Picture (cartoon, one colour):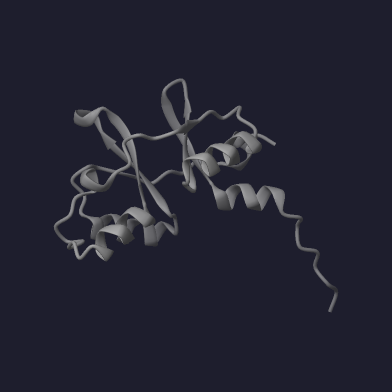
Length: 130
């Protein structure tokens, strides 16, 4: 199975000046663990994850004043839609992260998460008749 078969194509995109509270609220409303941060002034695309927000709050920083740009992972590993799920999982394990932005011809087309991969690999639950 390929990344294109598992990835989420509806991607939450935020700007670099969103506060961490705004980002967290948007992520919670969409029930996603990561947001793509589009920052053309800083070189393009980054990712902000729930872990980035948690780390900031854990350090005592205010989610009302901290900006997404200051907590965005800029050294992002990107996946291609044609990667296998094994390649994506290997990249996640090697890098120690749970999300990959999927690029097709330098454009973001989705995000694949560990949850997406597990959903594809785990056997479907069989319904037991009542």
